[in-house]
Length: 49
Image (cartoon, rainbow, N blue to C red):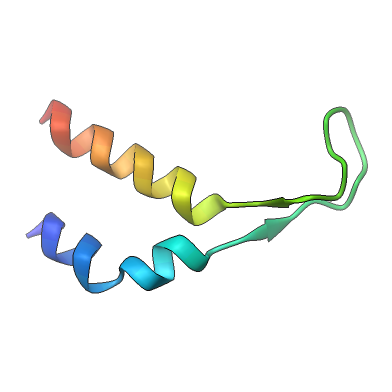
C-alpha cells in the first residue's frame, strides 16, 4: 500500500535535498528540500484518489 511506502521511508523523503547552482532567475544557490516537495505531491495525490 502507498501509505506504507511513505511511513517506512519517511527519513529518506525528509532528507532529500537538491542544491541549486546559483544560475538563473530565483536561484540563490540555496538548498531545496525536494524530498518534502515530492512528499507533499504524493500525499495530495493520495488524498484526491
